[in-house]
Image (cartoon, rainbow, N blue to C red; front, side):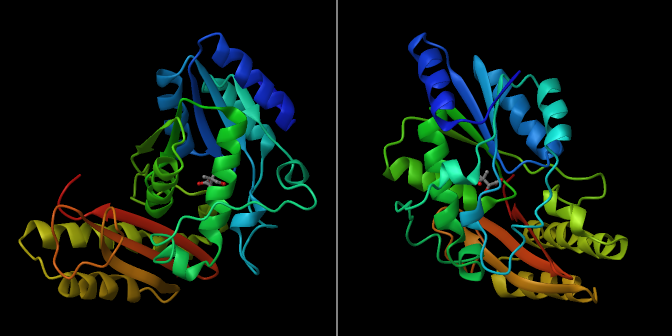
Length: 282
Ligand code: PAF
């Protein structure tokens, strides 16, 4: 396994291997790897001749007052996990290389970025799409893997790749959870033991939503009220958003159907966690 920190070197490596007919699988991350990332790497290993992992805590997707400075980082542990996962190259660029002085170009997907996390975190998706586009131009992947916990991010990236005619396949991978249901996230490391316990309400309330839908309930307002009540009994939990949306348009749905996704973002203390599930389908 090689670590590359230079943008030019990474691009040269990729172009060289691609011209030799090798298929590059790519897993972009912000590091502090957990089992969720490892599931992406495992899929990448199976789907490419070469596997590239990027680790870059992207400053442009964090808003003022968000956790950019505190975002957990552990390159040594990430390196060990990446080696076990069969990664060929870890790409770790600096912020100065990715965004040199006078950097001026942004990728902005309209519409679906303005709701849910986009409404709560203005500018967040512009940072995500800009960096993913740049990383793809540098790494030149044939296929790239993203987790479904960031449901909206996955939808936005799919839209960007389609609209920009980017020559790669995007694969969404299922959410990986702890045994008690908490969706894995690097931000879980911020939670106190009490907050972590209360955070179980996220996955439990999603399960309640699915149960109600499975029992025939189609009225979104009724499902949302039941889910809200289950979360709000936890004193440290503050709902940022709780919505039932169409999986592609991300517009609110008043009636549940096979395209309905229940999405939520909840603060536990200062930590904001997101989770989601389809209501009727897997
Ligand atoms: O999901 C993430 O870790 C980040 O948003 C991504 C896609 C690596 C872009 O910085």
